[in-house]
Picture 1: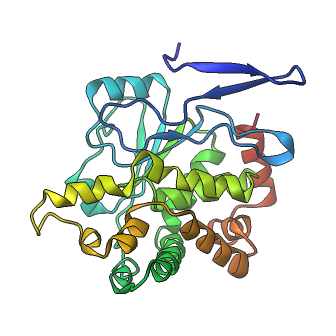
Picture 2: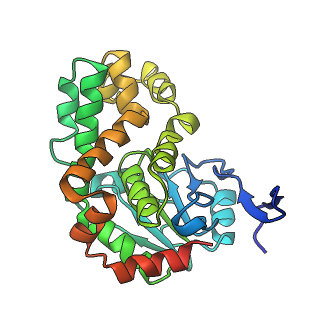
Length: 273
């Protein structure tokens, strides 16, 4: 039996709602969260314990890895570049029963453009545009992620380094395909700066050498907080571009990853309760 507690809440109408903690209690985890519990298509909710999102898993303790294995996580979609994976290899690599999916790629210049931002508002636009660039760069990874979900290989976890940008885009796409409303999609994205606030990275930078410091931490604080946080305006901008260019995130998933109406119906049947 899983050691993770779940709770049944009785509603005013006499029904019951199953809930759980969103942030998993890991000693060495970063932003490891459950995507369950959100209201979705036709009055259903995203099932708990099926799809997770996370930051880097390099510092998971032995207790953490045992805990995650007890949850039955079968697939890890690691969205990090080859260099990132070499620098901080996942603690779950080689774990029995866990398949880690990853591909090498170059991040390109989209993040470098952030260094030119002069105002917070400009940073929001540039960062939101970078999220659309992520979708182009990581299309093979996102496609493989959806294929794993369609093959019902869950529980599945998707991660990058901070667990908020590349993973934030992945989570927004998954939730949107499952029929979760826009406000909840943006709200889930914004939770990253609640659990790992920008000050965490800025404080790390304060005690680091110039070579160790992320260049973003040296930007004016309002701009750095956009880049190191998860300002809702960033995801709203990215989703707005998806609306204009693809008819929305579901339209994007159909065009970029080959999802059909039948595939979307299957995902909703498999992951909604």
